[in-house]
Image (cartoon, rainbow, N blue to C red; front, side, top):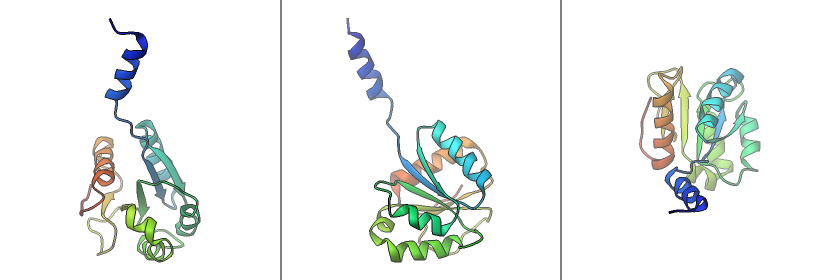
Length: 144
């Protein structure tokens, strides 16, 4: 018979440890909170910025990041403008963290984003699958 401690260890090993860190950059507070709630309920650690300038400042202090969800059309700085500055100011982080556009458009212009997720999202399960896929692969174009 297994001890309680042994059983707990086996259970913990069977549950995948997510705790992946995601930065959401969007000028719409309601959307940030919606995405934050969904992601945190699924064991993601969520950071947020309300625009490109705030995100660039925040990125200087973040030690580990697994994904950036970036609104394509923000007031002060567009998503593509942010990507350009991000690549210039923090090339090492840029090279290692996949960036995914959040957009209402059906297509995105050529950019260094790895793909896009349509908003409003079709359903929560598809959104989470896309997030996982972008974190796991970090490469290739995709959409939701």
